[in-house]
Length: 238
Ligand SMILES: [Zn+2]
Image 1: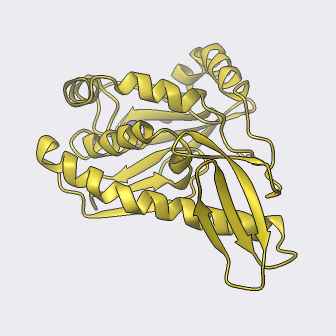
Image 2 (image 1 turned 180 degrees about the vertical axis):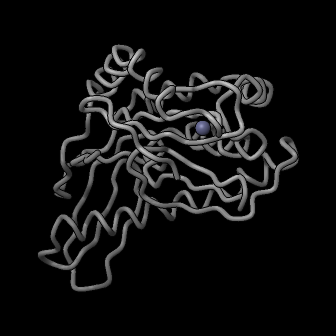
């Protein structure tokens, strides 16, 4: 957990790490600002650095916020929904039985009780997306463990607002965003590898980049794909 510094209307999270230099990142999807700083560095030095990068931060945030966004879902028949990067048309079936989701050829069939509202439909589909990731992510971890010589203690799949994945190098946990089940499968693999590499190298430094280049050469392509794809509609609060 970091502290936050305020730069005009922009809030930046400061995360202390065992590094020699400051790193400033603007994170997708919504342009959250994170500064990785050496443990002993004065907060004022960090603030001066951040202010010097303010124009760049604003440009990056504008780029991210200009990304196409999904319109709010109503969960009505013929609405588009994405599964593993492919578009499906929703078919809403109302019936007096436990809700279910089923993937057909070009259809995503959502069975709900009559009158089920959008919030509940969203929960049902989110649960289904989470399950899709749970079915494939452990095999990816298993595949990459020997190559990276890294053990993952626990894998979590949950809705995350500002990140595709995260990790805890101490507890050796990895968290994956449920939304990854909407993107091409290679995006999920990229995030799994990215987070596993973080267990070897917590910061996005040269060593991290070298490890990514060595093990997953096309990673930049998948990162770009993830950052370009429509992000979920949500009322983002900073
Ligand atoms: Zn990272």
